[in-house]
Amino acid sequence: MNRLDNALCRILSDSMTDILPKAGQIGVCTPNDVGDVSLGLYLYNIRPCGEIDLPPVVRKGYGVQESPPQFLSLYYLFTAYSKVDAPYQSTEDHKILFRAMQVMNSLPVLTERELGYCPSAYINKLQVKMVDILPEEMINIWTARSTPYRLSVAYRIAPVELQSLNAKMIPRIEQTDFTGIQK
Image (cartoon, rainbow, N blue to C red; front, side):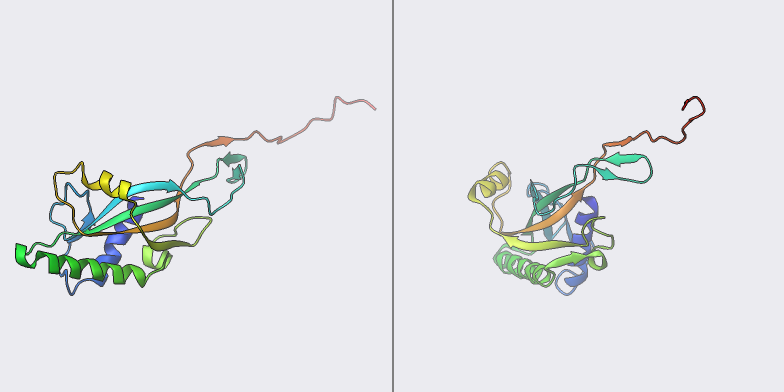
């Protein structure tokens, strides 16, 4: 998931240099710990993605099998945190957020070309879709924070592969001895 976070920040940074010219102005952060970013990406929810069916066991080479990976839907909150004076802050936040929306809407799928890595051994692209934030989710994100609500938009990115660590060796018969068998 860290590779996806970095790829999203790079894609947005490369596409928004006209309004966020300094490096490091787009980053992963919580709404409570923004730091110096002007556009924050916050992973606020992870859900199972049932769009891919895999067999119960995957063979990995000779004599090794593992559980299949799990596929997830990741929900990111994009929030603008402009650094301008109060009278202009809302306008600047809108400009940043709407440009981020333009960038994401121009990339309905993320492939190895955009990500810089292959998304999975089983899939070759990630779907990007703007989603509604449920009121309960919005309350959970913003009420426990010491910062006031900021204009935000949410995106679902799926299916993201979560590799299995459950691999085991399967014994194989490598030789047989028929010398002791009588006819």
